[in-house]
Image (cartoon, rainbow, N blue to C red; front, side, top):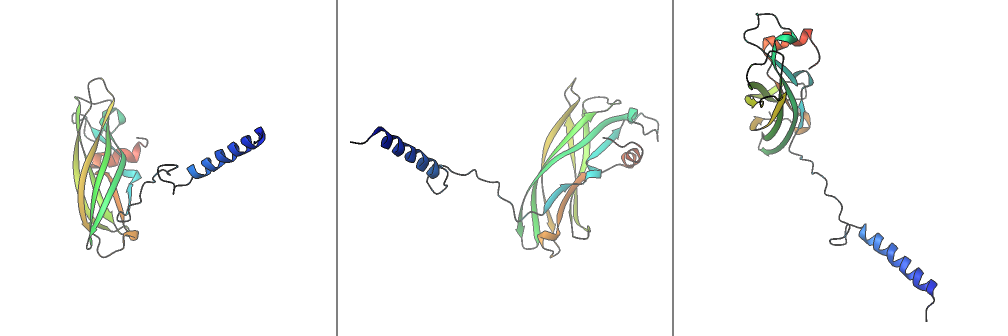
Length: 189
């Protein structure tokens, strides 16, 4: 006959053994580790160019050259990008999901704005190996300040024989001359 202490000791050993087994990923259906997001080795680093992550669209009735915040109809914000890629010979095929937001400015009229952006493949020396332009239409509901869309696009660029480690996918707004001049004088958005 066993004593109460030996039952307690056996129970304690069983608890520790169960905890140890549960923490091992080799035990089926017990203690599985969270699956980490796989790194896509076929995708170069994908970045939003910081100076081109914001844009401004001016009210067409504003006096020409009067590029003040008061005359901004819409601000565009390039918020996020996700990429998946495949290689076919020396051609990189990228599938991109872009999150782009429109925000009403003081001179906004209506609820709709079209914003233009680009996707480029650049080499180690920042040379542009390929570039594609896109337009996205955003409707901001009445009485709302901002709205966003997920714009899915697919592009294909020749890598010029360069290894993926030397390449970057860069994105940003295709700035108008007015927006460039505006951001020289008014930092912020």
